[in-house]
Length: 252
Image (cartoon, rainbow, N blue to C red; front, top):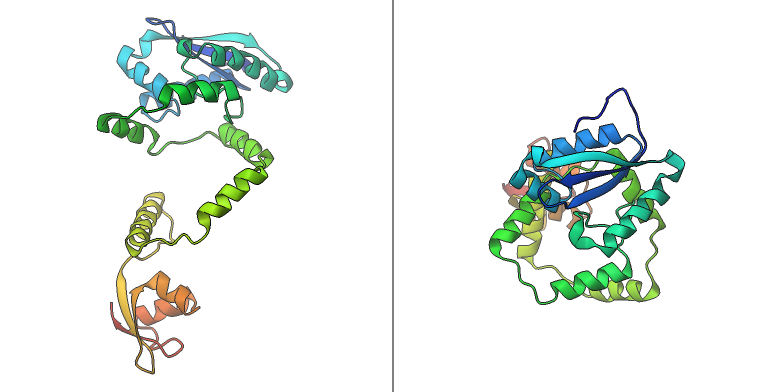
């Protein structure tokens, strides 16, 4: 169903699977624009809801119907969406929705308990894991969604118990050299994909101090270990200067 693009409607909408009757409920200040975004990301397999995306490709785009459930002024949109999502939470098998809060935040305690009971002891197949991975890789959130997540995060306060657990998990935790290497390589790949110029060089080099000491490691580790500036170390690596604080490049 195509929306009239001359209209700008604020309110609640639904995307219904004609074959199964299962639907997705959402709210937006501009429903027409949101519907376009849903179709685009579902088609490109970049949608945030893998359940809806899976059925979109299983039944085809013509197998779904889009409609406006309720027109709501912008100032009352949050409350109206929460009211509809509460219905989704009570009947999860009838809806594609996976979060039951308009800001994409924490599900209700009842929903968490139900999900936990269902998933306890469940093991995902390798194929299922790969499908999940493909579904979230390269995921893009709209500006409106990012603003919702930001509002939720800014209001979130950890309890004393949670803070204690986080502190306990971090105390004395040391990463192996292999783990550090993998993290550096993953960071390098991620930054290359995003076009960032701040790339962490994973190559191993050897440096010698003026008193004969040797250091073998990455440029990043060398810089951090001896409190050097990245630019000065880069000058030594690229031959613009011979030493930095008595350290010279042996190989690299």
